[in-house]
Each structure stands twice: as structure tokens, then as C-alpha cells.
Image 1 (cartoon, chains in turn brown, green):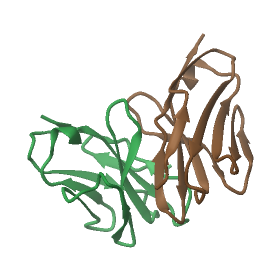
Image 2 (cartoon, helix red, strand yellow):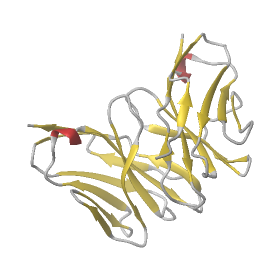
Image 3 (tube, one colour):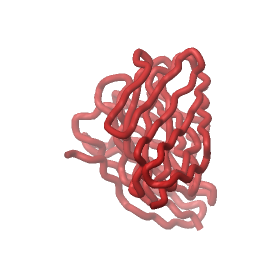
Image 4 (tube, chains in turn purple, yellow):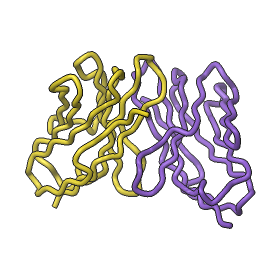
Length: 113
Length: 114
């Protein structure tokens, strides 16, 4: 089945810096890659997603890139703000293996002002 | 904006007891899910439900677990005989009809088994 690896586990940046979180997946059939942000004690919330027919997607300060050949995808946050501090999870799924999201272990992002 | 809701927010139970966690998915969604998250760890898939039957389940979802959609709005997860290691946050999620797409998560039920 699918396995998703995520790095780094923790990331500390200064306000205004960029942050990059990387994930790799194992199942070449995976075709949907969402990123969720989870604040302490709250539900995971989708911040951006990408499908396998696209190499990059951007939404204001957040972008995701996908390299299908290498089976990795990355989250880029520019001009970080303290409110970006949270745990970020990548996930993968395919409509061949089913619709379950397989999550990475999460990255705790701390943005200091 | 419609949201997935879950009750209770926190459930404390003794080992060996049965618990039922309840979820109300978004009304026009067709796919329903249960995930769990042990404190400080990643979100883990338990089971998905579509067209009134389980469509897939993980290794975690053993015979102690069951799901049901007893009416047109509720989606429940039952754990028959709870173990200490079942202590976790349980999230329900739902998704519209497309095969892949955004899953909307509920606020979770924190289950504590003592």
C-alpha cells in the first residue's frame, strides 16, 4: 500500500522567511496530494492540494510542487507569519487504491517574530 | 458553510466497555471516513464508507470496530471492547461524489480509555 514520508519533523523560521516541507510517496498510482494544517487541538484543514496532471499550484503565499517521476511533492510557504505556526501534514491517495488519505508524520512549523 | 460535526467532543470510558462515536457528515456528501490520531502522531486511516457499505479499511480496523449509517444523516463508529491503546482523537471526514477530492474533517472526539 501507499507510504508517505515527510521531512523535516520540525522547522523553525523567522517571520518573513520561507519554509519548505517535503514529502515522498511510494505508490505510483497516487494522483491526489493534499496538504493539511492542524492547529493545536483542532481539526486538520486543507490548505492546498494538487493533482497528478499538474506540476505546480499556487495560492497567495502557499505553493505546492509535484515531481511524479521522483514521487515527491513539496509545500512552500513564503513570507511566513506567526499565525502560520502549526503542524502541517501531507497526504496522498489514488482512485485505484481507494480514496483513503495516507498521511505523512507531520511537520511542526514554528514562526518566531 | 456546512461543516462535519461530531459528538461527543470528549469521551472517557473504562477498558472493555463499548463506545459509539457519532458524526454528521455534510449533507450532500457521499463518501464517509473515520481516522484516528494518537496524541502527537500522524493521522491514520481507519475505514471508508460509500453506498451503504465499507469500501476499504486499514489493518487497525479489526473486528472490534464497526461502522454504521443508521439513518440519512448520522455515521457512527463503534468500538466493542475498548483497550488502553484505543485512546486517541477520532476524526470523521466526508467528501462529495468525485473519486478524489477534498475531505472535510470534523472537530474530532477525544477518546480516553482508563
